[in-house]
Length: 220
Image (tube, rainbow, N blue to C red; front, side):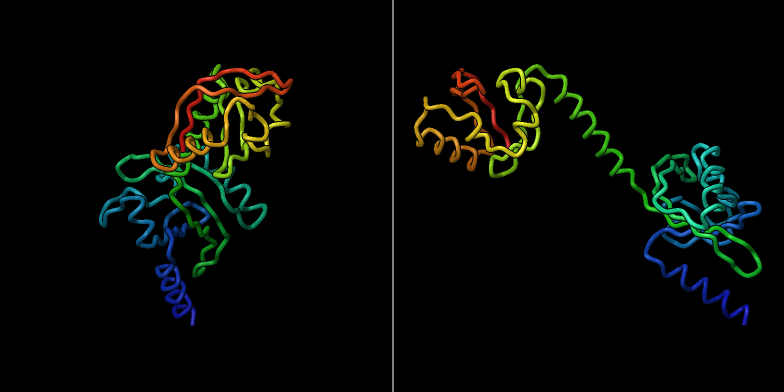
């Protein structure tokens, strides 16, 4: 019966649609690794690398606090750590770990997802936010209806509206002046639809009611 259960566990782990590692808790020896995990870690049959889970950590010191939390709570979800493959290439992984009995061994069952692209996207967003924050030009981000989602300090300085006053408002209602007729705005809309951008000089209105000219660039 024990052999049947062990084979059943192996079959289940192999069929999982995400990378799976099973390691003995006492010495971190890898007892099982499914094909998806082997692919992510670029493991090759017959090589010694990868026999211990410590081989997968860019920084081996990241593993003890992970084990401490799992031992305390029995499981751990959505833990970010840097892994590396057999070629030494680092990647960010999102781990979930669970205490697991495999045969007679107390083990740690680990599933992980490669989140490198997500981390790179987050870094690009941080850089974009930093640029937005530090540029002296007025910048407004809206949705497709022209509702303001974000503004930068340049917008606050030039219009007199605070960030709290601007968010959720329509750019047309907030900044519209009486210097342009409906056809002017309709023409801007047609150009945006056809080319994805519009640039030109336009009169806008500050919070105090003052009209002022600005060189406006709109991109989708």
